[in-house]
Image: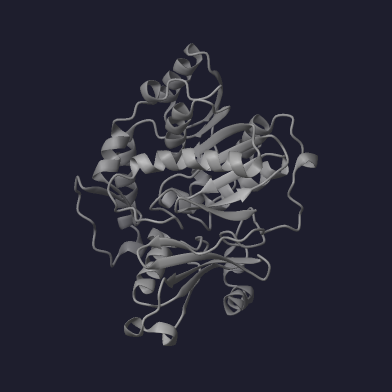
Length: 382
């Protein structure tokens, strides 16, 4: 796999030799933290079946440029998927592109596919079908978290129409209004030649959507997603939905086999990306450590100055919080790194071994592994 940056969006390309490619569309916020390891594993498994995959962070999320508090992100998120499709086609010589989205990523994928008009397949993993229900879901999750011991010293965010709080991630008014206005039967009536839906949350709405797609001549397959709840647990406890992933792989890869894959077992990391501007005066550069065994993002001021510390300023190492990827809970790692850079201080936010995008790529992470000496050694190496 190799890192890519396009229009300020950071992602990973998993190239393969086959003519089929897939863009993976992450869910929003905390859901993305929980499922990051799983989505990476799905990308790797598809690549080993001969299907190239591009997974990426939407504008204002993950390692991409921008901040979630910026207004008008709904349109850039959809456009980001369209740009990812274009990049995948250009980079890997793909003839047929499919989209696979989880939760809010599924909704965005359907809308982008409808606009593109030439998407071969669309996989919807428990897509958000009601913006109003999704908003309620986020609020309920936040209230549940406030009742836990970990939140004892926290000041609750007030209920407001300006944003909805979701475990440190926020959806703001304009995004919420855009989402609540979406009706996939109206706005994405025929998004792809064929559609695979895995859902166990909203049977009535999914029934109506599947019926509508079939009436439009779309080839639709529907399956349950009984592993959903264990997949959506916090990063340490999240379990790979093996049955669901196997169905997705078979549905997307078709007759492709591992023999067509273009990813040798030893090529954990390949390719270089130069430093790119993520905000005024701040650049970030993907950094492989020990040939890609570890991976990090080097964040630095564009120009050092004597007033902001300059070359004499300390550098900061930011490591994982538990099993969460390098962006951190509430995107703290990214926000902190860029704030430091604005003050003239460089930093490296790194994934320790077995976490995020470092090696080895694991189906599961244990608490013992998090507290092992290897983690301290990896931090010293970084």
